[in-house]
Structure formats: C-alpha cells, structure tokens
Length: 106
Image 1 (cartoon, rainbow, N blue to C red):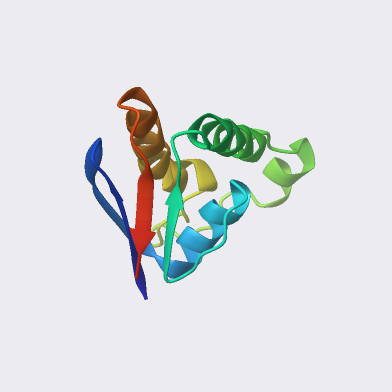
Image 2: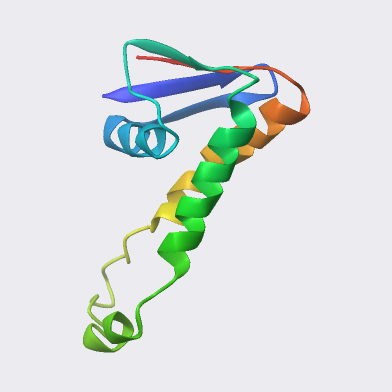
C-alpha cells in the first residue's frame, strides 16, 4: 500500500506503507487513514528524524568488519534509514520554512 504525504511547501511524496510507519514512528506519530503534522510539531519532528538518521550512521566497528562484501556484485545494497528519510525530512524542513503543515492519506 502507498501513502501520500502532502504539503503546500513541497511536491507530494509517495512512499510504501512500511517506510511511512517507520518514519512516523520515529517522530511519534501513528499511521492512520489520514493524519497531520502541525506547524507547531514540525521542529520537534525534524529534530527526532535528524537524530535517528545520525544514530544509524554510527556504525559499530565490529559490524563493519563482520560483513565485508556481503552483497554480490549484481545485488543492490539496501538503502539505509538516512537515504530513505531524506525526502521526508526535506518536506518537513520546507514546510517549516513556509509555516505550513504536512498531511497524509492512503
């Protein structure tokens, strides 16, 4: 299932349900049929998402040496949270700059 995020400050953002659930969970929201991130909530949501992205970039030294080259040449390496979160984070930042809310629906 696809979820569409809308803001007057950015283009519509369409993402898979599982990613939407993850990102909304990070910022303390729950995926319903419809929802909104108010202008008052934007600074806190941006901060939480930025912190989560920063945390995923901190690689434990043991992890980096345990799985070197674990992906075959013809396989794509999975996207990490930062790569998946940036379009949403960009929308949140643009919405904050323009003082407008972010809404979503199925």
